[in-house]
Image (tube, rainbow over all chains, first blue to last red; front, side, top):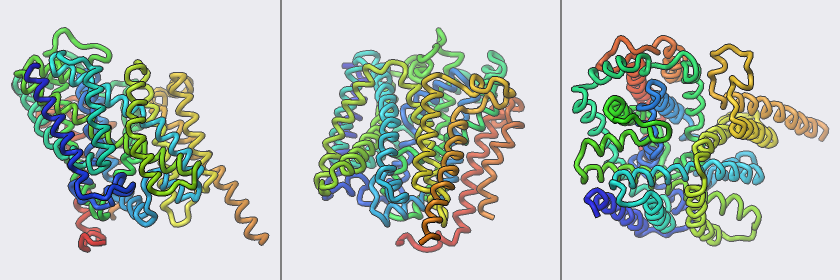
Length: 489
Length: 64
């Protein structure tokens, strides 16, 4: 065993220990397991949300995009900042409603707000379809990080199995308490590693940031800004806005907000988070540093490995192991949240709906036993899913974004959306998303007569517009009927 | 007032990006578009800090 693998293994064991230990002194009913008894203070809520910023997708994808795409990478920083601005008002409202009605999942929210278990079932099914590829992507990332960082001494498949077993054990035992404790170590480690890499690599290879960017600009003119078409300014703005809306509509991020002890926590986090996000800039720096230094140049999916490949060329084994451990934790923390949210939703919003006689203990037990089941499903797709998984993840993002109107309008004094309207709007949005993804359409292929600016828009816009139209059309219709019934009565 | 403040980062994106999409001049060692992005990430925190401090809801203690 080389020292890199040893370091990764030690970090894995420590996180497993922290994850299991997190259970101590807790009566693990479903509310404790899924929401930590709504007792978390600012730090834990902060770290759980931060789990969303640093997933393997940002760790590998962020540096990979900087390496392969350049300027467009910056969209990641924008959507986060804008989502945090929205969170100042959105999260306290969600939290208050969730606490009042003892909600445990995002589907609970829809079922309660719209007084419709059927809507809860619909949202659960869509949420699960969206979350599985997200989980698979974390596992694939975990596999390549650990296998590259251990200098190939362990295969990606074995690394994935070991990681999944660890996360399944502590998630089943400790629920969100385990996630919170492991995220403490994760954020400390990732912060240190990323800032170091982002400063050291540009300085070491180029003499400084300014020199690095000048060199890149000279070698690849225009690479650091947005291109005129394709990932243009129009693409950039529409993608940032859509992604910012979808940020909290992921079932696991939505439900993570239930863990807070009070609503002030969210407003405080909304202040700190944009700044905290700047750590991602250092991930980008590391990716940019790889552009002129990694030879031969990486292509296609291999661009995601830019950060790791350059690290292997630059550092001793043990330190590459530390980088690998940081990447591993980036997969485990969101992974455990995803496992938990999916299991809670299947148990509470599907199983319980179809078997109303089930009592609370049974629902809690089913949720916990589902964790290994969901893990196995994710493993199946990890090893058999092929390249389509990235397309599925993008589809997942667009799918959960379709929940946004039904969530936001439900907080208005007189919700203009009816039960049927929310249901129909979401279904319409999802159908467009699926059609567009499966047939590989873009705005350019759907509307070829439009000017370039419109063609570059993110395809999600079409789904969102149609969703809104259907939502309000159906709401108007169903509302009128209700009113006329009232008048007749 | 607070909504005007909160809309600034959005305007910096929707309007600002058309002007900020350029590599030069480089500022603080960063391409201009990156500088513009970092500037608004920092200003988002500033904006939210002002909103937080002036929001009467945050004057009360943590117990709610």
